[in-house]
Length: 170
Image 1: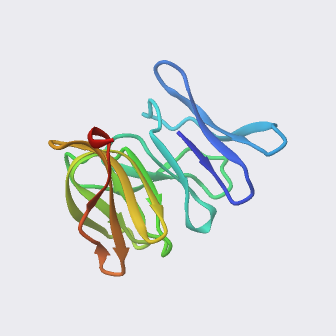
Image 2: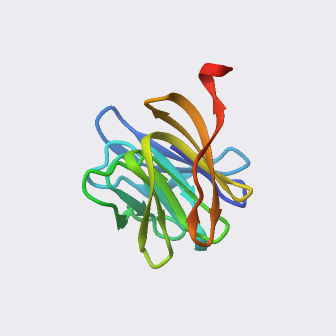
Image 3: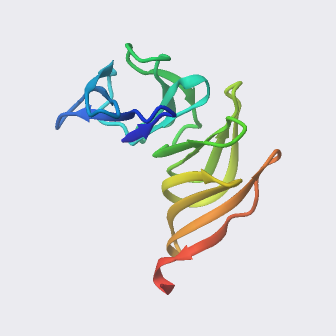
């Protein structure tokens, strides 16, 4: 997993074959340092995103999202849990600071700053998602095949997903 911050620093998960070794921070001049030590029980991270307040958030294909201490220095801590059976592969933040999460689930999830979780129906395996220009874009595999979908983000949540790009038709 990789993430960047507004200063142009790059954050990268560092793992061995069987465990997380920690999180590295690379600066624009190419130097690097340990941003955070290994997190107990983590084999590998699947997603990092810099979020509100300069906190780095993470997912690892389990039913949780994690948050690192502001400025690093400590292992990630559990930030929010999702319903049993949920797998969160990727995360991103929208313009209002809400976290969006997806994976192999029957829903896409929104988490507000107060950690309240809302589910929006979408049956498929979400591999990647990204917020851009008021929409949530997500690459997903469904019974209809692999496609890129998008849904408009509003104050009420998430609009109806529509196909943005169909790989089979291209």
